[in-house]
Length: 107
Image (cartoon, rainbow, N blue to C red; front, side):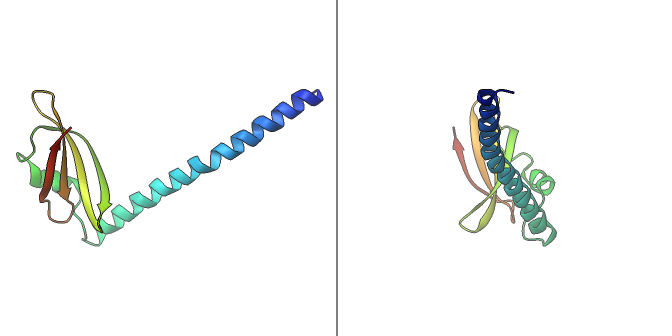
């Protein structure tokens, strides 16, 4: 390997090494969040997604296209993305403990 090629390999390795840790950190962060949600369900602080969906049956403005859970002001909220029969997209925020619809907004 020539000096120039060796330097290029070292530079590429350095760049890849710098890029890898944030992804690993993001994966660890996501794993931590999943564990935090699972523990909250196990402790009874929030309801499982299946229970929330059962409680919401017939109350959403369409079909669920996606869901996330997040903490907002210290409370857990499920955020549902819902598409109605006309193709309109809504975000529906639901209290993860009580299954109460907090707000609905069209996107």
